[in-house]
Amino acid sequence: KYKKNRNKHELPPTLTEFVPQSLWMRRLWNTTSKTHPLPPAFPGALPIIGHLHKGISLSSNLLNFLQIVSDDCVKQGGVTVLNLGPELHYVITDPQDAALAAKSCLRRHYLMDFAKVWQGNGITTSSGETWTSHRKLLSPAFSLPVIHSFLDVFNSQAKKLINELEPFVGKGPFDHGSYFVTNNFETLCAGTFGIENAISKNLGATYISAAYGMVDLLKAKTFKVWLQIDLIYKLVGLKKKEEQLVENLHSLAKTVIQKKKLARENEALSNNVKSPTSGLRYKGFLDLLMDLSADGALTDIEVRDQIEAILTTGFETTATQLTFTVLLLGAHPEIQDKMVKELEAVLGPDRDVGKDDLNKLVYTNAVIMESVRLFPTIPIILRCVDQDVKLKNFTMNAGSYCILFPLIPNIAAREMKEDQFRPERWLEDDFNGHQDFAGFGLGKRGCLGKTYAIIAMKVLLANFMRQYRVRADMSQLQLSADFVLKPVSGHEISIERRHSTAA
Ligand code: HEM
Image 1: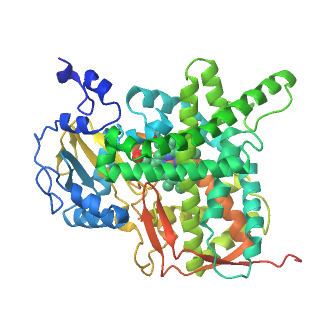
Image 2 (image 1 turned 90 degrees about the horizontal axis):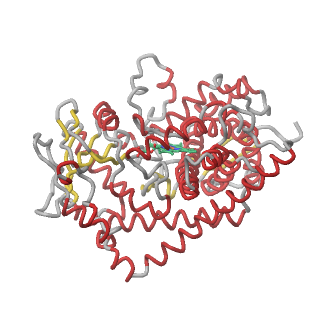
């Protein structure tokens, strides 16, 4: 009876007790029905291991692997099959099929389970009813009124970045990426936690470095499949390393929760000091979490897990997207001039961005969307196929998985072709890319922080690009993809002041 009713991605309860983390048993247990005919397979499958050997041998250059698979998929008509061991994965590049799959497949892929030691059942790793109810509870904290209340933080953080980069003015090419990461992380903490100086510089740096360490471990576990066996993971010393990193990561959440509790107690006492979003119908993220915890809707651990989930999804994505956008603008001076003209027309030379300005920055918005189209920082979406799902020409079989990457074919990895970066396309009536655009995900599980990300990027660009003229050469750009698509070399920019300080 259990087997009949169980979700095909779940182990029977007795087995989960004995193999808490290992995915191997789940794999053996996995029973994908193959009732519906399969699309063409990616070439090179071997018996039993399928395409696993290709993934392992190409894992040092994952982006290359994704591009090879994606090119083949486009050639085959937009849907193919990849067998990773016994597991059937549908690869989808066709935008409409990707949208259909994302709409029906809400359960996270098993690889996301690796991140649970860090993020527990946070919004990014959870599935099923937990995800449905938490998504509903958290959504108001990412609504427009709340994000508008962060505008002061966004403007002042942009100015901070401008000052930090001042020593590079007129000094030739430098790597702007890491400055954007630190600045964006601080912005995210200040905005979503709603506490001034929420974290020290040290705590922030420790968190960022631990987050990168964890991503390396998750990547190793994904491709070195033997590390998925708990005993081996322990024996090679990685479990210990993981525990240390998780402790470092969790210490930030612990600190901000304590500070927030104190701030709320003080606020209740004096009824004087207001958090940036107090008084709003929609509350800021941490205030909302605290209220939900006080009402018993979230446990303390769940509060921590949601903080981890938002920090992880929020800081590197936006920072890397900005790194790409500034690079693209530097390499396309005519587009940069057009954007700065719009910024100066709406804001003048140095005024802060206010909420009424946001909708007027139409071209700036198109520049951001075009940057996401060409360099999608989250280029793949991985899901479980829980029930048969009808696509245009195939039906995906329940019990399998799907890998959606409609944006991989766009990635300007090798050479920027002329006209490839063309923000104008987002303003043309006949551009049909809006509807199935996957840069911020697709369907109900799409990006929770999209409004936050777009407004934060707009404000930073509006301040930065009015201050500095940027130059860049993208001809030597090298990219890598782990969970985030990022530049690894050839992305340096040079900056000059647009207006002399005396003026
Ligand atoms: C340029 C910036 C960003 C891009 C390109 C981006 C892109 C995406 C994409 C493609 C997904 C879907 C992933 C999937 O279905 O597997 C996603 C999910 C998500 N994003 Fe973003 N994101 C950005 C910034 C942010 C920010 C700033 C936050 C939070 C402050 C955020 C929070 C989330 C969350 C919580 C999810 C998971 C939603 C769920 O599972 O229900 N993102 N994002």
